[in-house]
Length: 178
Image 1 (cartoon, helix red, strand yellow):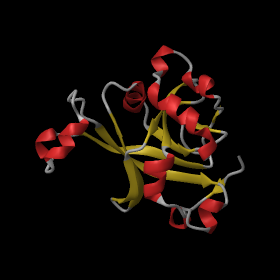
Image 2: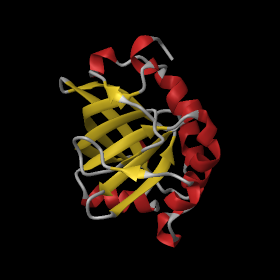
Image 3: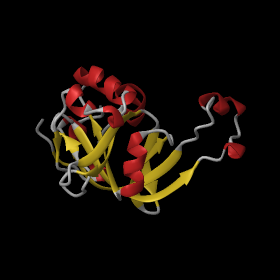
Image 4: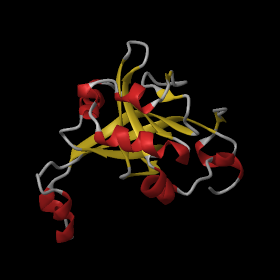
């Protein structure tokens, strides 16, 4: 997939659509060392925090990717074309602890431009991030009681804020609202 660098102010996308309908691959680790994992995420946000562009992701304690997020300082968020929906489902359901789910999904890990965490050759949009904050959700702070339904196992997410250091995408992410 041919991608070009995009200034965060020039990124054109439908953020809600990406999170809710298209999904991201959250990848952390070190590509050069061959030590990384990825998972499909559909909860998060993009914005400005502390005068920096950031991506927010949430990860439950049982996820293997969380071990990589704890050990490494960087992560990537990659958007794949809709034709990769089957791969995204597999990567969201299987654990990297149990085998090479990336190979099983048919994806090609590649080095990112600015961070140690890899991205994928098939990605049409890549956000390269460095962690700048984390916090565990505290259920006593849920103001809407319906939120508790998302945690029948009481496996509350850890939220990570990552400063976006680089964005790379196909041309339609700079020329029109997607």
